[in-house]
Length: 69
Image (tube, rainbow, N blue to C red; front, side, top):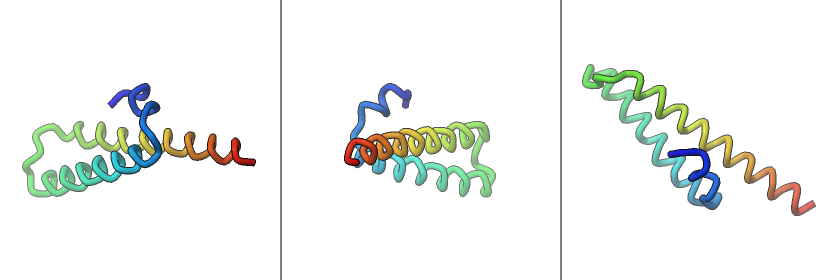
């Protein structure tokens, strides 16, 4: 998912997406341990997606905090 698409989502949608992507990370790590993952770089990409989602979530939460003060 691209950054511009993530920025269009609401905070609750981003939280749901984070849960979904983190579940993918866990599944990929289990597959890696079992030797079933052919593309290990995919795990790195998914972890970066989680970081990207969390960064934008914190930006949105920060913007809400500043506007309510």
